[in-house]
Each structure stands twice: as structure tokens, then as C-alpha cells.
Image: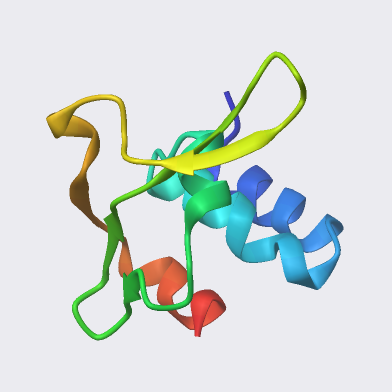
Length: 89
């Protein structure tokens, strides 16, 4: 388990284009497939939320397939903490 300062240190150590990935995974508790399926329109930074409506899965062939989350509960709106909104902007 990382502390909050350690998460921000990790986010600062990765290339800048991956910073949002680290922060959303940590503070939004998003799964890898959900992160991979996010598009620019999914976050609503004014409302401090991100809408999860798709997930990427890897098939046995190595093909990546984007589809609906596995369950109805998987499609959801996740609240984000104020502390990461500036980084996501």
C-alpha cells in the first residue's frame, strides 16, 4: 500500500502522459480495463466525476476488445477527490 505522498511521487516519476493514469487508478479505484477504455469525454472535472461505461479486455489471441463492463454495477459514475482535479485538467 502506498501513502498519498508516495502515490504523487510515483505519478511524478512516470512520463507526464501517464500521470493521470496513476492518479485515476489510485484515487478512483479504476480497474486496468476501465482505465484503458476511458476517453476524453468520460471525466467531468467540474462535477469531479468520471463515467465508466466501457472496459478493454484482452482475448486469448492477444486481441484487445472494448465492450460493456461485465455487470450492470460496472457501469457507474465515480467521484474524484479535489486533490487530483488540477492534474487531470
